[in-house]
Amino acid sequence: MPVLIERYRRWLEIPSDVVPYSIGEGSTPLVHWQTWGQSRVWLKLEGTNPTGSFKDRGMTVAVSMARHQNAKAVICASTGNTAASAAAYAGRAGLPAFVVMPEGQVAPPKMVQAAAHGAQLIAVQGNFDHALTAVRQTAATESWIALVNSVNPWRIRGQETAAYEIVDELGGVPQLLALPVGNAGNISAYFQGFRRYTRQSPEFLGVQAQGADPLVQNRFMDEVATIASAIRIGHPASADTARIAVKESHGQFLSVDDTAILSAQRELARGGIFVEPASAAAYAGLLKRQNLSVLPAGDIVVVLTGAGLKDTDTPLRWASITATPSHASTLLTTITTMLDEALD
Ligand code: F0G
Image (cartoon, rainbow, N blue to C red; front, side, top):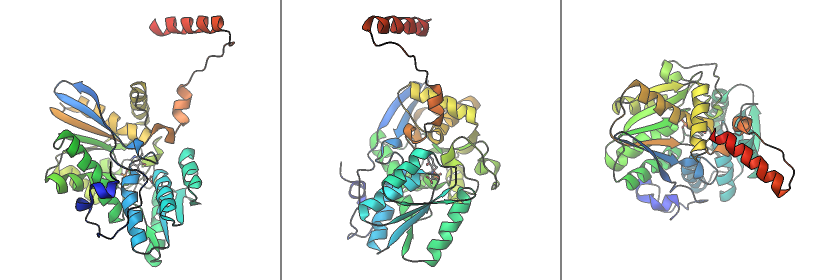
């Protein structure tokens, strides 16, 4: 596959002399998961992007544009995935990256990624919303620093490409699209993407975590709490466009609690698809939607935004490890006993 920017250059409308900085993003699998009655459920595996989340689609465009516009550095606020992606693409483009994260609230593997790619890590007190306010103010006064959060329109343009891919693969727009909503950039990108590419859009199911669900409550929240740290956000920057996407597509926002998120994460993982809690929220939301009203016939896509290894705390608790001596005969006895128990 050509690099993402080349694959969809015409649709991205970036200047022809922009040099793409790529690490192999996009062209992610759309896996048929199950068929429920008249509905075919597909999973878009965005965790297979190079840094393990959908952020890479937007970041390749935002960082390439930053470089084109002679920025000297990039900066972002992040619950972790944007930080990892910004760090990787800045590294690729030879730019320093400053990643600002809410102290103690980011899953450690995401910090490992940002550090490995050479970013400067800055921890701020408060939550993501405080971090974003601080970096927006900094970038507004310092024109040499490019802000690469999803308030940067090039991030959104890049993320639109996921919608293009779905249309290319299914041969049209799905009936329903479920995705997790935090800062609300991604739902805005999908909406714009489907509209730009086809003039149509699926019904949007914007899923938030209970405890961090300002779009469901219809009020911004200063205190936020959920196990899904990636979407622990009370003041989504793109709230207005997200509301338009849901309204115009006759969709809805709904929230799912931590128990439902973890159960969805486990169900997907047992079926071979390991995603982080924020991504599992989208699937939990679809299950909830199914209980509320009949799902549309046709194609349903669940966007699984980030890989399971991004946040390993909870799955580690699922593990049970049996110790046994290494003789083949003892091992076989252990396996036979375990198999009997499993089949019981
Ligand atoms: N899923 C994952 C895995 C995320 O990391 C995020 C956002 C979302 C869903 C929600 O996307 O914000 O566009 O509505 N993560 C951001 C970050 C906030 O800093 O990595 P959104």
